[in-house]
Image (cartoon, rainbow, N blue to C red):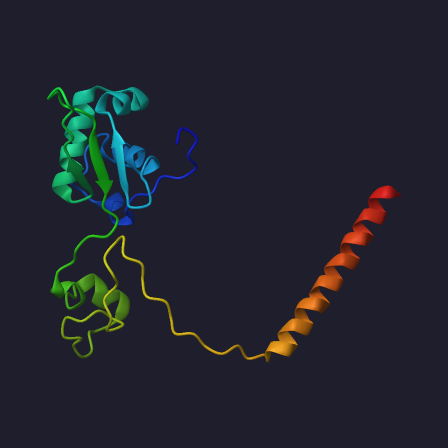
Length: 175
């Protein structure tokens, strides 16, 4: 992934005041190499070289990110017993307590007005989101509003229009 275009990191970490020094850079670097489940295996030495800092700086940042709850670490032992590159997982979704939706501070009241009623600790929609890594259930299938024959005719019509447009473009290029 040497030419990755994006780094996937949790948005909540950006404003976390517990971050120090190069913590965010280390997290962004991990996010550049993660697989679909959020895991990557990266050497601290290689990370330090990429970031232009010492290995101990990377190690301190990884420990702090782990303590904050942004990164999970898994140690990997090599066959000869030496320490090996660890597995790191960027934790995208924090586990929130039940009181997260009942907490209401002065800043919320100023922005949204006084709190009306209680949600009883439930999420706003009443249905909790699945944990990270588990796909959300698909919505129920609905019948298409157009009958099958109308959809077939519409597909044919669009194909004809695209063909005509393509022929016009080809003629224009020859002129």
